[in-house]
Length: 242
Length: 246
Ligand SMILES: Nc1ncnc2c1ncn2[C@@H]1O[C@H](COP(=O)(O)OP(=O)(O)OP(=O)(O)O)[C@@H](O)[C@H]1O
Ligand SMILES: [Mg+2]
Image (cartoon, rainbow over all chains, first blue to last red; front, side, top):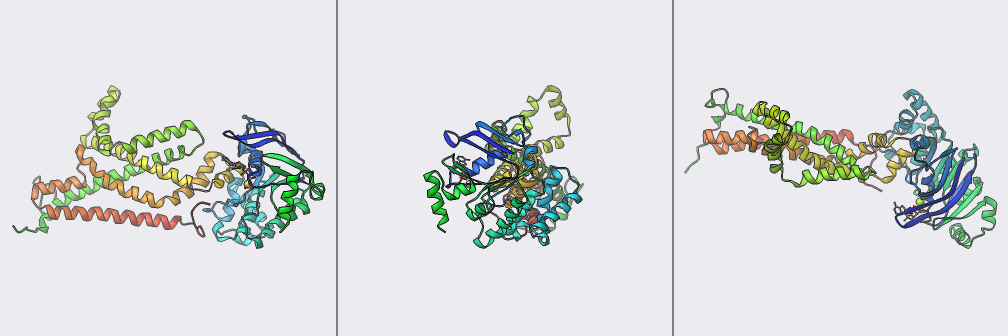
C-alpha cells in the first residue's frame, strides 16, 4: 500500500532524512517513534507529498508521490492525515469542517456530505456538537473531530503525526480509543506516536528513527522484546519509565 | 480685532448663484466619499491579490508582489499622483493618451486620483494581508492540502477567511487613511471636501466656520467608518476562537 524506498531529504545542506526504506501493507498498523528532531514528522509528510524529497521513491497505492506528473491533490484526498495540533478550521462549524473537502474535492452534494459527516461524528461520539465551532470543544474532542474529518474522505490509509502529544493526559485515551477501533477495523495506519501502550495493543510493526535514519524496523513483539540497536533500547527505557 | 462669527453664511448663495455655501461643502463631501470608496475597492482587491502572491511558494510571483509593494509604498503619494495625472498620459500609446485628455477634466482628475490612491493604499493593504496569512498556524495550510484541496482552494476556504478576520483592525486604519489621503486630489484640481473649504474661505472670509464645518464632516466620515468596521468585526467573530498563532 505504502512503499518508501531509499528516501533522502535535505533542508539546504542539512540532511533530515537519510535513505529511509520501509513498506506498509494494506491493513497494517505501523508505529513510528524516535527522539525529537529525528525526522518522524518529515517522513510522514513526505508520504502524502506535503514535503518534497530529493532522492528515493514513495509509492502510494501504485502512484509515485515524488513524480512531477502526479496530481498531488487527488492523491492526498485518498489519504487521511491527523496532526498534533488538530488543525480544524476555526471559522467553520464542526459539520462544515467535515463537509468542506467532501463537497469541494470529491464533488459530493451537500446533503450527502452532511449525512456522511454526521455519521462519522456519531462514530466518534460527537454528533451533538455538529453545529459548534472548534474553539468551543476540548482538545480531545477537537482531535476526534479531526479524525472524523479525515475519515469523511473514505481514505485508503491514515497518517497520524503525534495525535495525542498536545493533549492533556485525561483526554489522551478518548483519542486513542478511536484509533484502536479504527485499527481493529483493518484501516492501514502509519502513526507517529510515543504512546507505547497503543503500539503494544494494535501495532503490527514499530519503526524507530534516529537522526533521519530508520534505525529499527521490527515486528512489534521483537521490538518490545529486545530492540537490536542501543539507541532504541535507551529510548525505550526512557519513555517506558513513566 | 474681534472676529465676526457668522454661521448663517452657509445658507447664503454662492457668487455663481447656483448653490449655497453649504451646498458646496456637500458637493465636496460627495467627491471625497466617492473617490475614497472607489479607491478602497481597488486597494482591497489589488492588495489582497498581491498579499496572497507574496505568500505563495513561487519565487517569481513573490518577487512580483514585493516589487509592487516597495514601489508604491515608498514613493510619496503626491509624486505618484503627479505621475498618474501629468506624466502617464504622455507615456501611453498616442490614442489612449489622447482619449484620456479628451475626457471631461473632472473625470480625468477623478480617475487619476482613484487609481493613484487605490494602488498606493493597495500596497499597504497587501502588507497587512501578507502578515495576516503568515500569522496563521502553518498546519492550517497543510491540513487543507492534506484533505485534497488545491492551493487556491486552501487560500479561498481556509486561510483567507481567517487572515482577513485577524487583520480587521489594521484594515480599518487603512480605510480611515484613504479618506484623509484623498485630500491630495486637490493638487490636481479636484474640488473635494478640503478644497471646497479653501474656496469658502476665499469667498467669504469666514475661515473658522468653514474649517470647523469641514472638520466635523471628516469626523463624521471617521465615526461612520469605525462604526461599519466594528459591525464587520462583530459579525465575523468566531465563537470560541482565542486568536494568535501556535
Ligand atoms: N522547514 C524546516 N527547515 C529547516 N529544518 C527543518 C524544517 N523542518 C524541520 N526541520 C529540521 O528537521 C529535523 C527533523 O524534524 P521533524 O519535525 O521531522 O522531527 P520530529 O522527529 O518530528 O521531531 P518531534 O518529535 O519534535 O516532532 C529537525 O532537526 C528539524 O529542526
Ligand atoms: Mg514531529
